[in-house]
Image (tube, rainbow, N blue to C red; front, side, top):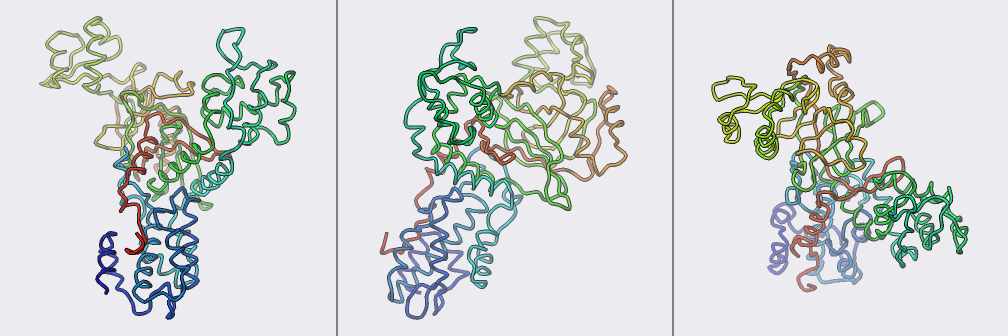
Length: 529
């Protein structure tokens, strides 16, 4: 092997590749005369199209490789270097397609790589070359999720809107609403930006095409058709669906298509981390959407077996962590062991002001010797704050965990649970908890995860939830739980966007930009860099 080529390969981090792929006398991508084979041209075409997956073709040196391949009859040394470069570019591309470009643990995700479904990129590439179809390698490398392909299509659509004239001018301020004084656009009213609003909604697909002209001129009114278009837009962006655009709706309308392109690309990256369905059932919570879905494998493929709203950790101080674990237990009529942080910040100060709050709300203190106390004194509260005693809430109608707790042991002490505070589920934005996740329909979730436990009928579950006596049941089999964070999804053929409430998208975007040049995959031969 030529020394300069070896140095170049090692600089790119190709030690494992050199060990497994010694340079052959007849390079894989070139013929004996040094001309690129059709497979080489196909590979470059695929690399150039990496942006259709939300990836960056420059990470794989696509244009430099295309330029180098266009030179006919190159010397053997240059051909050997290009052969290695193209192989590494394709391997890097396939690995990025399956596992992403950034370790999720660097950007707030605790997903374990072993759970994501392995990919032998080298074997996949070799098989595709043998079949004469490199697109097959790409198809086998992308996450096998219908949502992934739907987001790719949404990405292409929003790319076509980049630079659209509807976003070249800012929407004027909304008129002041007569009834409340706030700036809102009411049905039947006039608005200087009505035509521009209609153009944006038409471009986004929320307003039927060829209707924009009716909103030109000073006499145009905010009519029912435009109201319905705004309602569709609001529904796709996690807003209050009332057809009355206010500050939040206007802010979402101001987001340009190129920003949505970035957002969809980040969602595709996150889907590459998401652990795949590896059992009959899986529960997935999408934090920014405030939604839980239970997926199950049937004879017809994967379907949603249950779906419900959730309440997640507060964005400011109690963000719910992202990870995957197995749900192993259900606790009916659970005790709530109050975390020391909540006890120190909230419960103990309340008890100091109102000692009767302890028994009135069903709390009790378990002392160092196991004794149970339902009356407060300074010594007991000091023990609670020091961690020498446990403050807990008994099962019952006031219990913060409601009638059921779903346990998937994890180091963050996060779980799913019922709640007596059901009114909060009506809010559009639902980050109100201290980190654990409250579920809107705990009975439906229990039925979903206990489907293979026929003795646990709906009636028995309901009885156990309301009995008031704590009971722990081991799930058989365990059910995987994924706490995910994706701010763009396609639902019922429409792309939906959600606020980056924890700032994870900003963190991921910064991590992608900050990658070292070597990690971005400079695949040019040494003499061309």
